[in-house]
Length: 413
Image (cartoon, rainbow, N blue to C red; front, top):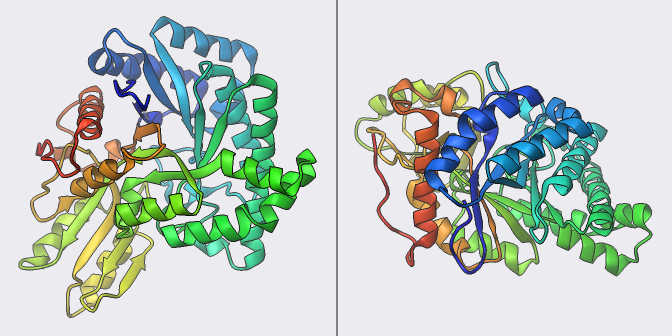
């Protein structure tokens, strides 16, 4: 869906909602799901893709015949690719993923190799005159970063990938940005941590030195290239879970010269504890599933913040606490058009507020990303995937077109 706005923004959804690690499965998903979505939300006009490719699928598309097959599908169905989700490398559905979703991370050479492969694929598919983005893990899972040297190593690896992006731009004319996605319980989870990493490491000595070694650039040229080719993937669910104020967060990134080349439009869960808290805790058990991490950020009644790596950990701790916390924000992506869950609600209002702020920025890539469809409680899957994705896109397009941030949403239940 290309938004009919003068700034030329593009809206899509991420195909990581569809299980499939092999190229053949990706191809089947394009035909079974993406084409019907396009016919519903973008009849008669090109529809952009947020493509998720595993390491195996990326390897397969490195072969010319497979890449040509993908080009043929795009052309036949009036589709185009402008962004790739390069976050999950391995199996992403059907079995426990949890913290393995970050592996390989930016401390491992395979992460650089994989992201370089994605850049080659995107450069080959990207329409002329359109910039591309690749979203990626926020460095590493937090326990992996023990020392300043680890953070510097992550920055050096990211700069090595930027060298690839610089070469691609020179060779193909295609401009691609790496969009780093802060997430709870990772090396980069808050906006303050993210800005600190960019300023001290990625745009600092480690990043510039690594890029200069690979390209022969001057120090000023290296810093300019890093600022031009690396930014933040602003996942709205993650930021809501972290209690980040959208206006403050986005203003701080921009004031630090950190671009926001990609936004992931997603909602999590918000639980305010008052009244019948036992019923709330009991209802939350339906979301404590075994595939994905569902980090919890807890606001204590004294204003302190406490973090839990996964929802079952938070529920176990709450059972031992004599006093309930003030509020929980939970990293469990839920459909954007749902707001009311009975005993708690989604962060839908936060999404609308963030989109209202983002409308005034340079960001042009918006990707709906509710990958948890297959692990949602059954009552939230009462419609098919094509209808659900279409409604999410329609909800987001309406918010982006509004003149005000806080508009009523589709509160389907």
